[in-house]
Structure formats: structure tokens, C-alpha cells
Image (tube, rainbow, N blue to C red; front, top):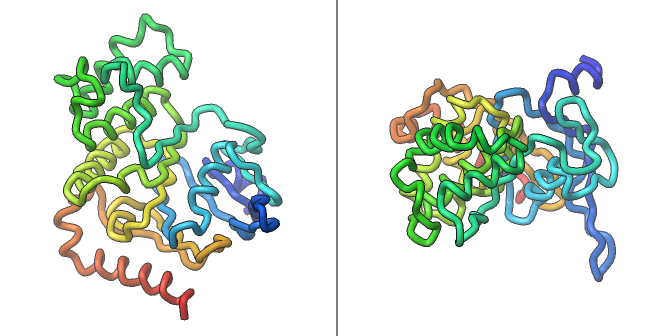
Length: 262
């Protein structure tokens, strides 16, 4: 496949991308000649050591960092600034504390330019999808951590992004809440079928969620391995963790990460 054909077929395409930062001690290379794709409706997870450059890659796709060399395209268009219809979800929720659940979700509709006459119906749909209908008038301080993350996800879905960039969105949650949010995200993804690029340090979380996992080296980020996760969907996350296929994938990814230390 030619580069032009690959760009057309992929939702996201990074071609030989390198990224560096200027520091007080000189130029620091963070990403080293990374090439990867994310297809339409594909769930891709990036794993690797802390500080290796995974978040930098997400920010570059969102147009928040510039690539030093190589190219990044989204839907066949080169990224030279924030592309349209990309949603970004961070580890810490960025809800507006003075606005209700409904009002926080409406922020996404406003950013998407949706007519206010359509807001009531769309918000009701999202609240039902997120199982938050009874909390529509609650404020963020009245919600649990998991519910706040669901509201953040609702605001992003209200924007109707073709691509969802998620930078350790559940990293600060306890194990049980993280598992619940993973299950909710899969349920929503299976209904919405958006392209997701998801960063995590949790190998089990990565295997439970992904169609494909890309393993990175310590900084500067280079791709060490790529694993296509051939586990059936829809996935029961509790049952998955007891399967030999699941443990095989997690072992292979740990081995890929460990090989860089040898």
C-alpha cells in the first residue's frame, strides 16, 4: 500500500515522527521515528515506561505539540494545528465545578456548534448512555470519582469526535472503579464505534480494552512490539482475567517491556 493509500485508509497515521523539546540542558529527544496507524473504529492502546513519550504522541496528534520531523495525518489531512472532531480526555477530569452534570455535557455540544434547540434531546441520550440520568442536576463535588469521569466522557462524546485521545483517564481511580469505568468505556465504544487511542501503564487494562497494543521503549519513545488482541467482543472483563489467552497476552507485553532493560 502506498503512503497516500495508507493515509486514506487510516483514521490516524504517524509516519516516521520524531519530537524533541528544548530544555535548560539542551535539546531532549522524546519521540524517535515512530510510525503507527489507527483505523476507523479501532481501539489502540499505547503502553510503556513513565515519561517515555506516550502522552507527547497524543498531544502531537491533537495538534498541541509539533513534530520535529515526519508527518501526522488525521483522516488524510496533515496535522498543523488542532484538527476538527478530536476529543482529548486527561487523567484528571476537567469538569467545571460551578456547573451541573447536564451543563458540563452541554459544553461539548457548544464546542461542536450544535444548535441549542437540539441540546435537550442529545443530553438526554448521553445521560442515558452513561447511566447518569438521575444525576443530571448534581454538581461535580457531589459525584464519585468514577461518575465524574463518566461526565468527562459524556462531554467528549457530546462533541462527537471521530477520534478519542485518552491519556490515562482512569489512572487515578482505585482498582474497582477503574474496572467499572473500563467496562463502561467498552460498552459506549461498542455503541458509538469511534477510533480510540488510549494511554495506560496498566497492562491488564490494556489487554482488556484493546484491539491492538503498541509497546514503547523508555525515552525516546520507539516501538518495541505490537500485539493484536484476538479476544472476542463484547468482552466480560471479569471472565477475561481468568482466561489463558488473557494471561498469555499480558505475559508477552511484560516480556517486551522487560527486554529493553536487559
